Length: 233
Ligand code: DC
Image 1 (cartoon, rainbow, N blue to C red):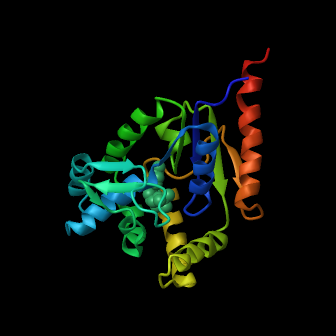
Image 2: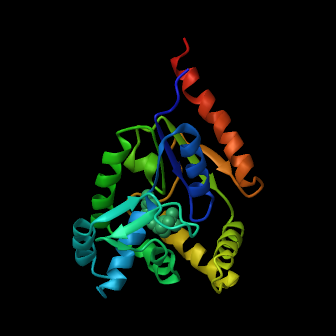
């Protein structure tokens, strides 16, 4: 039996991709790579440097020039990793509502996507990786050995995000989160380049009725069946 060397997990915001991806990567001893962090980092930098977010050329130049690093966690404050932009720790800053509200627009610019996709592909092709995003199975790593698409209703995803924010002791408004989630879904799935959609050969999982442990159990089964059948006569 052989295990899938490259695992792609796509799906909408807060569908549980990161939780699943982290656990799966830990189980397999693989690298976990959350590509959303990169688009968030570009968006944070654009806001921080007060650039015009509607200037696609400026956003592309920014994406091509900033240094985004993801490293092992330096603080025990609930983070899974540190995210640095040009050396500055922005791990929590990139989760702020201003970033949530603008990241879909920034990530729709073809030049921004080209810059991010090239970096993601370079890491992914080394293998032993669980890569999470919107277009991993369709564009970044179409050669992935296993493609998963994790879905859930907008209401359930907004509820989860609301609990996360409250859990961090920050103020949160469920209705505002739901509206922002729907707007991001709309932009992510209708953009011209690399829209959010399941790859043709993706396994689609609905996490509305499954908790994180149940999703992981299902995926572990899929992983162990995945490549065995391919190499059997
Ligand atoms: O997974 P997330 O919520 O952190 O992603 C933030 C945004 O980045 C999301 O609205 C869409 C974009 N994104 C993308 O376009 N392609 C990816 N591979 C990952 C994220």
